[in-house]
Amino acid sequence: MVLMITLLISILGMLAGVIINLTDRRTILSGLFPLLSLLVLTTLLPVSWLALIIFLIVIPLGLIGEVLTYDGYWLTKHVGIGVKSLFFLVGGFLVMAFALMVPFLWLQMLTQPLIIVKVMLTVYGYVAILIDGYLLASLLNALPPHTSPTKIVILGAGLIKGQPGPVLVRRLKRGVALYRQFPNATLVMSGGQGIDEPVPEAVAMARFAIEHGVPKKSVLIESCSTNTATNIEKVQQFLRPFDQVILVTSDYHLLRALIYARKERIDCQGVAVHTPYLTFSVNALIRELGAFTIMHRILIPVGLLIGIGVTILL
Image (tube, rainbow, N blue to C red):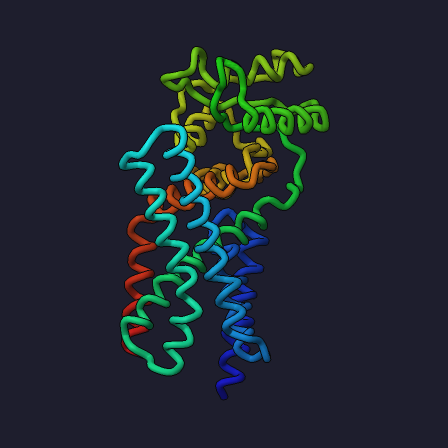
């Protein structure tokens, strides 16, 4: 009976994941459903749960802790000891320490299932599974698009001395390459002007595209946005109901941008631009997770509280 229920839950979860990915995968559920289904399925397999815990919980938390600690070290070295550098140093060290504690907590729970141990494991597991689900959803949303775009929207990033920085250059090169592949499309540059930027990002982006062979008439400029949410909101003025839209941004940023597009009811697919700098990518991913948590500041804590409540009752 238990075997049948476990299989049924796993199959239903995987089916839900397939349906979401085939209809509209611009949600963390596109990654969470397959991940949780596989986790349920592993209860039937002769696999070490300790190994799974290390892979799914310890590694994600440990990686975040390592990056935070490195950030704290960098800030201390270049800026000096202060509240921010100490926060990163101490916080990163604690996250790494907690990650290393997870296997010992798991073994402790098997021998002496104290409530505090169960609650700690629930919190760590919840956070780690959100991270894993977000990563898997990001990978699924980075699959090659299957459309011939009429509008190619490139999201802005920081300028350096008025010129696109390395991250933005990568986005622009990918967007220009897409335009060359689909020359009837229009490029939409989206990015406002930061306090330390001499021109709006979109203006510098348009200049880059024109210098690389894109006709001026094929470039539209949205220069009033201040963040990802307003990027997506304000590009709508350039979109028409019949448009096939591709959204170009960095790999770590793609899922959140697509989630905003879904909220604004913009039918689009994404192109993820690879970021080769590992430390920068993980830093950026941490910021994306933070922003995603803020987007769901009610839903995510409620889920955690429900998980803790179920853990205590069990």
